[in-house]
Image 1 (cartoon, rainbow, N blue to C red):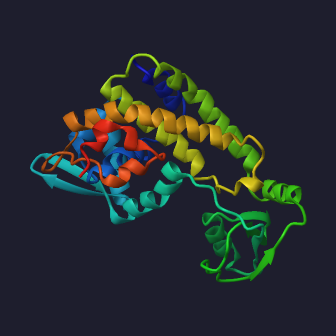
Image 2 (cartoon, one colour):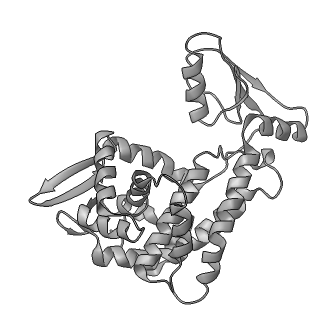
Image 3 (cartoon, helix red, strand yellow):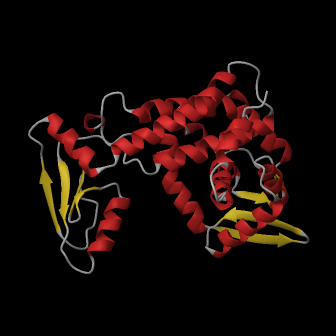
Length: 299
């Protein structure tokens, strides 16, 4: 059974194809938990299954090395790549959001920052938005979190409490693009629901499972990394992100055994086969403990 053709068609429907972004997903999802290094030959074999040629892969890797995402090591005629310290730190920071996805708790208050209208406003706003703040005006940002551990270089920090729950939800809808996020989550479900149905039948081939697993995370991370994971009290009822996460976790757990089997048999490093997954791998989507053939291999 092959699950990947319609998903690959959707991936290639986007122009231009962002091979570099896909390579980062491959490393972050499949290689980082297993030592973090992969031979160019193995990567070319994997990306060929994505209908991406070796020339495109080499060009993308050169750009990623130049941008500081990857480190390259040559041994004879072979090349080996790993995420750099910068690249690994960036993916580690995203890992909890992608595979953990825990919503913030809420004590009923908003942290509010009023920015000063000076030359540093743009930098301060960008930093706060990266931390999950939403903007209700160019100068006012809010977050349902305590600001005690957030340093703000400019502006005034306040705390505000809404007078009623519905007012809090309306404010959240103003500050964060929840409607657009919900639409993207629904699109994710529509794209991957057929794959979930197919998994109830025959098991996918090992390489096909790896391809679908990477595409699954590639698409999911593009959405969830933009999601502030607001407390449930601030979200609409039947939040689309919940269905998307359940679907993503269900498919991911089903694909892990055959995908890991392919990596065991084919993926290589400078010293030989990839090492087994680190123990933290089992924490992805809550209960990979049930995937027995992965559990047995853990270092």
